[in-house]
Length: 307
Image (cartoon, rainbow, N blue to C red; front, top):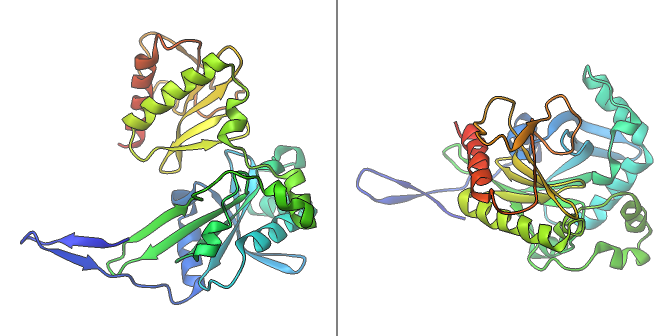
């Protein structure tokens, strides 16, 4: 990726890259901006357990799970082998992870509060090799790759690396690897197919209609399947969540009570009621009769976060 600066003569001048000299420099920038970059809560730097030292321990408040983050400058390592070794260590030492969290925050986590099935590891590097990129071509891999680039004018780019031929399951090779087999039995990377399978055919088509419209309406929106719903996120912030059921589609607008104008009162206040998705507004849809109106509410949520 190349960046340019336009001067007052309409001439483009390329902004050159300024590489991180030390892995620690990269780590400090990410830890200080963890919420903005990844939407995660920072727990501990250099967290040691057994024979490993994890660069950063973080917590995902949305999925109620721990996240291990590793920073890399070199390229001679396997993200799959290291990733699964670290995840296996986490699963073997759950109490230590909870204790570390509780010692750093006023709130108290209990074992039952954690959804270990949504644990994951994130690798952050200035660049990944083709081999490393190709190894994440599994639809259920609990590993994410992000490339970070520093430019000489203080600009930082941060981009997730996505697999290009995602189709097969990591479980297909777990028979030959005991660590992958163990981790896969406890951790599940949820896919869009997992979420869609819970809906009837008419509801699947209704969801897909919403999905297409939202992607057209909001630029750079990302669709992230979760255990209990499908999240539509922008800048690491949920805008709207969908849960498919056999005969209805549940929708949650991620905004506080009183911050949107719902003239038709299609959404109810769930701010004091336990619910799966994010936000204080929940709606149930069975047809596309109010599709355009609901899209206008979703647009209000997006505009709220763009202020």
